[in-house]
Image (cartoon, rainbow, N blue to C red; front, top):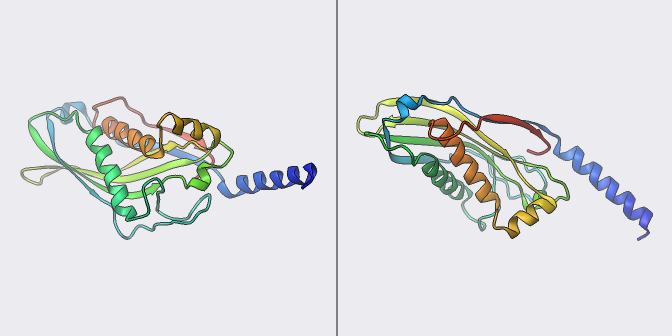
Length: 205
């Protein structure tokens, strides 16, 4: 293939990538709770629901149209895999609850859209780990609702191309990035850690 033809094809590919992925504004957003309230709580349990009504895609494309897109675990029950990731992340984020009143944090996942390997290999630093869920806090003894169902957005920039290849060499994965961000978001929501609310613009899902 001639150099000119190769350059033309690369240009078309780059244009197609830009046209397909689009862009938008993404957020980490929640209603931060009062530390005067949460300091009296002690974590008794975390319950996570990943509804089977959420759509799942295994399409090997840049941007599958689905609620759940997850690749790093072996092929299997994506609902269960996502539930385990969120369960562990919420436990980490809420581990500072050491008061007297035992509470249950119930989480319902509404979106878990990580990058496909095709998107991660794209020779461009783009993409978003788009994780959204509904959280509720109840008294573990009485069932009293202490925090009604609250939408939490935990969206964070993904890495791809050379940046992600280098990150993987250092042991950083999509799972570790998502888990760390969800844990930090939960800690911020519960007023146990820094407030990491914010928004960003980026090409990706």
